[in-house]
Image 1 (cartoon, rainbow, N blue to C red):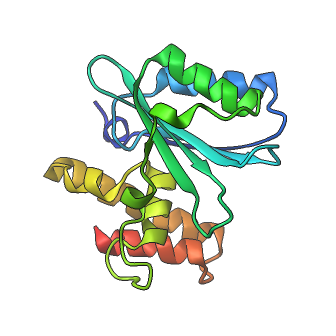
Image 2: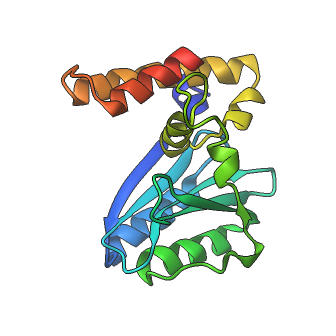
Length: 193
C-alpha cells in the first residue's frame, strides 16, 4: 500500500441549492468509495439552502462498513450545532445525504447525538491547545476530533502530521503566503501535532 493510500483523501465539496443530479451522483460515488481511514471523509458545505443546515459529512469505519454522519446546523451563534449518527449502512448514509442535499430536508435528530460540546470543548477564551476554532477546522479538513487524534498510534500520527504540513503549504500557496485565519489554523494544527 502506498503512502498516499495510508493518508486517505479529504473530499471537500460545496453545493448550492438545488443540488444537481450530477453533483449528487458524484457524492454517491465518493461515499461508496470511502475507505476505512479515520481521516478519509466527505464534507459537503451547503449554500443557499432553505433550511438551517450548514454541512453534512461522513467517514467509513469498522469491519462491517458502517458510516458515521455529522450534520452542522446554523443556530445563529458563532459555531454550528453538530449532530452525529453512527453505525449507518451505506444505503442509509446515501439516503441521508439525499434527504439533505437533494430534498433540502432535515434528518430526524431524535436518535442522533449532539456532539457540539465534544467538538468545541476547549475554553472559548483560549487559543492554546486544541481551541474551538481549531477543532472545527480539523473536523472540516481532516474529519477528526481531538479524541480521535489522541487515540492514533505513532504511524497514524506521523501520516497525519505529513498531511497537515501539506495542507499548511497548500493554504499558504492559495493565499500567496499572506496571513489569514485559514493559514493560522493550518499552522496551529501542525504546531499542535
